[in-house]
Amino acid sequence: MVWSTRQLAELAGTTVKTVRHYHRMGLLDLPDRTANGYKQYRMTHLVRLLRIKRLTDLGLSLARIRAMGAGDGDPGETVRALEDELAARADRLQRIRGELAVLREHGAPLDSPARLGSVAGGLSEEDRAMLTVVSGSLPDHALDDLRQLIAEPTDRGTDEDFDRLAEDADDATIEDIAGRLAESVRRSHARFPWMADPGSAGTRGREFAETAMGSAVVERFNAAQLKALALVHAQLAAQDR
Image (tube, rainbow, N blue to C red; front, side):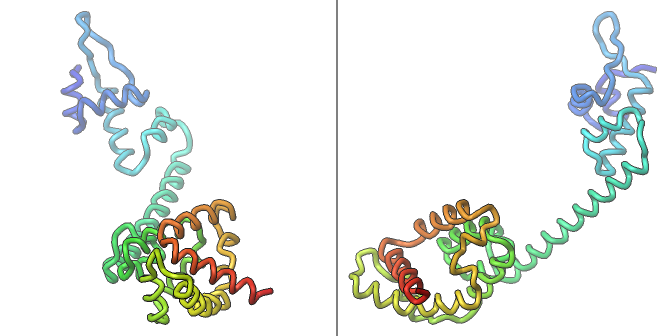
């Protein structure tokens, strides 16, 4: 009994495109052809195609199936490797479900950094953008500290004054806000020492962390706000000396 490509695909519950893809990958041998060029698939091709389908249903990649060849090797080893992969995938899916639950509970956007989902919903788009960059540079424990700080009550008056600080604010206004802000920042540094030198906590090195986080801060704040932050840094450095 021989079949055409379309007939073979129908018998195996797949598509002609899939059969041709398996040929290109070397997973399925090419059949003999008739004198006028028509393919003639036989039972061996159907068996191979059904076995490939079974293995992909179990979660094996086509690359692994190809490496397995015609069934050589230790089946137990392959099963164990697949079990390990499935366990890792299950852990990942469980983690994602937990993160989605946090986002849903707090009304946070789907693209919020994983460890900041519980506080991201209450932030502005600009602050979320900055934290997205920061989250790619800091370790989990640092992000946990940031989440804790964001969630805590703050000196709302100082924070609001800083947020409203206009680009053309005069020096006296900037210095006043910086002086009030410095005390809050000092307390944060005392609780979380890495914040005094965030580059030292960078997961991909100091240079990368300082470049990424510095760019995020410059993009987020206007010139007057950046001047206030520079004054805060200078005041804290003077206290340390």
